[in-house]
Image 1 (spheres, rainbow, N blue to C red):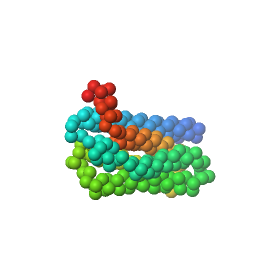
Image 2 (image 1 turned 135 degrees about the vertical axis):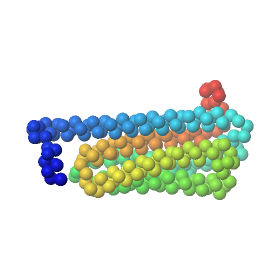
Image 3 (image 1 turned 180 degrees about the vertical axis):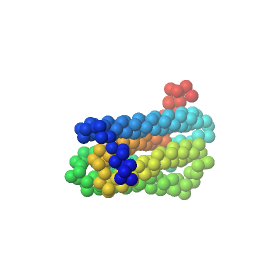
Image 4 (image 1 turned 135 degrees about the horizontal axis):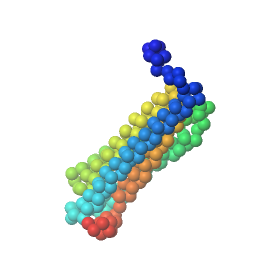
Length: 226
């Protein structure tokens, strides 16, 4: 292995040019990761846009009963959704605070913030599952009403995206525990912050859509010509 490493050295490069080459490779890798994330966010946006169109279209059928409308009204008192939203806001804010931590001097503080973001994100998912369980106990099953089906579908897919992000956060926490380079940690933080801010905005949109009154669906459907 030592022989291979020795043969892999580019002896014609000066230490300064080697540093520039390493920096260029790092910037190329960072750019590729940002592009991949933006592509992923674009795909998620299209997916939820299409779901929204079908949801508003389905709301115009006689058997559709909005979750915040008479006679069901399971979301008329939406404090549980606001509580879950607060957890996601805390997670997103935690990542912004983490970006302002000075490394390598404050590894410990960043570790606590990073762990807090994961806990808040998990609390959001647990809160959503508790809400599912409550709706189920109240008889709001998936097949009871088209609005119920969309609620479980949209919140479920959003939760899955959040779970995937938590796995990435877990990897970042592992890298942090191994005291990875400042550049590696900074890139991971930046990308996670973008993803979390996006998921927060997406959740606020879903919150507004799912808890809207019937008049709002009628207005949107009329605007869209549905």
